[in-house]
Image (cartoon, rainbow, N blue to C red; front, top):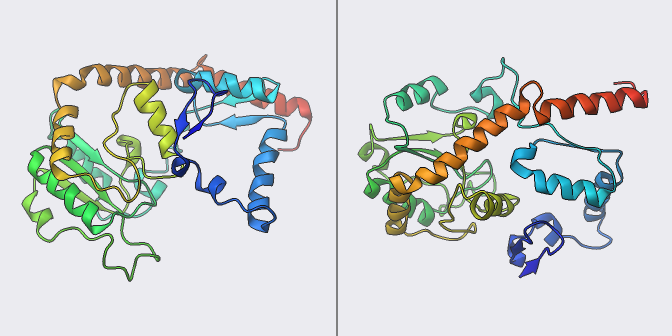
Length: 281
């Protein structure tokens, strides 16, 4: 286990959950050294602009400022896309339009729909997909399942990315299966498989208390009966406390980007610093 004792809350991770960029570093390798130089350039830069807000990660922003030795750390998030960029255009194509998705959601009661997504890169093994779809089917909950197709690395591999035959027909009316991109700004969620997702899980589960871990790792298979149990919990009254915390965080995010909010003011401060430097932008 690797302990980061100097970082607030002293996060601890097993080696395999650390960034693959860090774990794959080879001293002297041109690509590795290029990436390392990029990270060092961040530390040596005049300042850092981050897409977050103080109400979410304030303790870490303060720590970063202390480590860098200056206060030029500007949190200006959460950033939103321009009004003319819709949910489909933002991420990529989908076989289901956002209007169809939101129209279906409007027919469902609040807190009864589970959004299942594994990010933009992860492709589930057929065994993972089998247990996932079986659990969704047995649970009886309404759901949106976003399925990523096989990548170039999996296109010839029969063990990845297949939805069990007949599943979509059996859950018609209760579940939406989206092949491609979903409007994630409307329902952002995921499961810790790799990259920065383990750190995100630490923040959401251990610190903010708005989520639970069901399993971790890209090869882990969550048994369908366990998934049924977890789905029953998150759609029950037991989840009210976590929902309230999430609502408070949502309000804090909106307040941050509003006039006189922390992110709004940080953006002003950043622009002032740039103008004072006399740079051409």
